[in-house]
Length: 537
Image 1 (cartoon, rainbow, N blue to C red):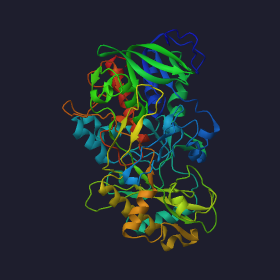
Image 2: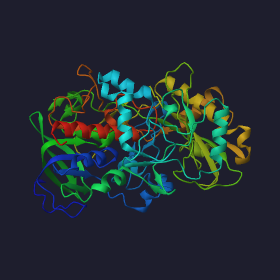
Image 3: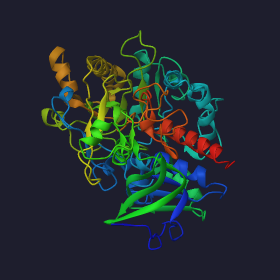
Image 4: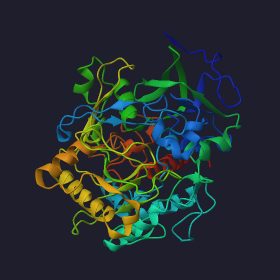
């Protein structure tokens, strides 16, 4: 049974009774949803409801920036798991996604990486929309950022998101920068400027951390400042099940909370900001998707869009190249205070590798059994090879018409041999850096993988690889003649009035860096488009 009486439900901000209808309903209070909710609620001209399946971000496990890894697998994680991947020797790696206000920005490693110039220029080419280009996106970044590092005309100051460099990083970091620079990966004061416009570089990542230990999520940056607004209602514990359609127009949103289903009316628009797994799931449960896929689960097809759930992409993070400390060192800041971008092949136009320091032993479930890992978070450090430009593609499918069923995530990791070759080179580069003489005082021994070659090294890569937590591209933005396009350049779902998508699923291709910052750009653009459409100023 579905109830339309909202009076028993109260928003967490101010205890307001929920309305039966809202101008705008944002489905998902993650990284993008928090941004869109703020932009639509500002000015008080429209009523806005933000629905989040998880709970509040104001808990110690989220706010402590050094503890982010320990949120994985808890109630603050959707706890998704990949289907078996042939390219990973049949393994089923976990696929963490944030389940709390702030979403991924509340449980991730807090790295602010803008993406490469070529990423956005490629989006502009693929969609025919110049507003996706790097130069236009730079303007959006400038208004988002409150940059506390070296001044640069490409950076923003005074925006809602505090961005800084790690404060007093562990001593290992300086040696890693010197080693990488010596290997031909130039050090940079700001890894988000020249390295993201050229052939890469190394250095301290931009981080969303205050006072060395306090996380800056999109919930704290965007949502908390507007929480007192009476026209913004935020409801946690509300899991969106489907969009109610009236012909080709959005009419309502159906969600479940504590076992009860509710339906709230949409006056102007609904926005899906549920992430690259749940956004295609809700679209398909609403009858929007591949007709054959929907028919196989007995779901009537209201609008055929074959690309829903297709084109799944994710960065690969490999666990990992590990060295035991000579002198144990506890993690600081975001526990990942060094990163670099480089090319596996000099002929490539864009860096395709994005390794990162993990200030603890970091291994897969297979490699952890194969090697003699030190015990304890301060015992060892890891250079984790990362793949920035994967060629492998997967998809997200329904398991059935019941919204309670977890979708099938066919990651298809390492199905393209070029991805394997790139990661093999990534392991080699990380070992060259980690075994450099400049790091002699920081390593007692190399734990793994050691000097593997040929098939043994390939097997290690397949056994060690998993997600970088950057699921994307399952409702991609494209031209009208793109057979897999789901949204247009203004993020409107093709063929459906009053419905947009604003999250990582709209990426035509994944950006060549951590995706939180580009997702904030996507959400800011969605806010602009919606405000312009409805005259909100």
